[in-house]
Image: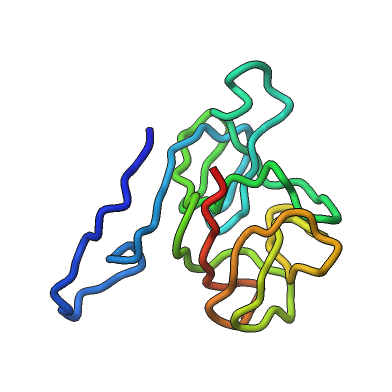
Length: 147
């Protein structure tokens, strides 16, 4: 089910949260296997037909970035359970390779499944940009809209 990107709050009050007024877009998919909140997920190309874009799994390693990466899971899910995924906009606590600085352009699942890492010139897929430095394997970031 598609969501819209209507601004949710503009009054400047103090009750802003991770999903307030930042034009985040989420989609609900079905998990192909175990997914943990903060994992980068990818479309499941092991499925057939339209199920390829209905089911997601932890993004597999691809040295130049995973072109099937759909977004970042907001919650844990087991096989055949629905999982909400940020497909564009701000998301917190994304699984991340060590040493990524603020403002770093990242790719998806370059060297570790389900993670983002700093992009390099050879990468063919850019996934987003960090808005803080990596700490304890997690980072807040902006996922670039890809579809």
